[in-house]
Length: 283
Ligand code: G4P
Image (cartoon, helix red, strand yellow):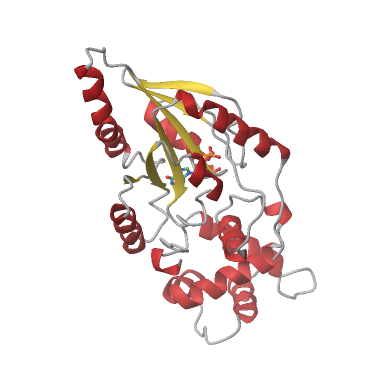
């Protein structure tokens, strides 16, 4: 699968992040809990190496809780604060605010020892497109201070957002990186819709998803699509899904395209179940 691309606005966005880094005390990287590895921008590792950092595993409601717990332990082990969040319901928001205060405690104490007044913490929020930055910020503010939308890259302009008298957020545009060295990373980004559908072949992508579900979540696949026999090739399974859902083209053959986009859409909405595409041991 050939997915090598880098829209120009992302180069600008990365520049904006680099330039504003000196203004902030702390960086929050929003990851998709279903793909904590693939949704972590490798370019950020070096960029943020001298900054205090919190990882937010967003969309935890869509991920497999057993796997998410493994990721939590993984981050605990490498001493990186990690918070599980569902930005739609607001689950994890209180934990996030507590974590900001905890991470900043040393700094507050040093300031106080120097006789300085406590000043608001400035936090930069980063993440790939569609990781849920806008939804996360909206939930924290309790209003629509940050715009949300169903297309990657909607958060475009620099803006400071006051969460409370102690915390200010700097929203940043979603950034990917210029080249995906690993096909699996590209596939996982596409499956979770960080990459727009138009640049991908949805049938091939859906086959990759079915291959994965057959290995890791066969019951979910069988249950959702009323499949009786899954000891067959993923292409055959997609045809069975057409039959069970009555997706037919004029003339009566299976409408594979419709089945593929339906399966992808239902996976993205969590209708096939809580599914994680990656475990810490995979890497
Ligand atoms: P972005 O700023 O990082 O680009 O992401 P944005 O907040 O626009 O969110 C992208 C999509 O992910 C939106 O769905 C949003 O509702 C959904 N989302 C964000 N956080 C969570 C979460 O914690 N759990 C779940 N289940 N979904 C989340 P959409 O399909 O574009 O719109 P909508 O119909 O869901 O509102």
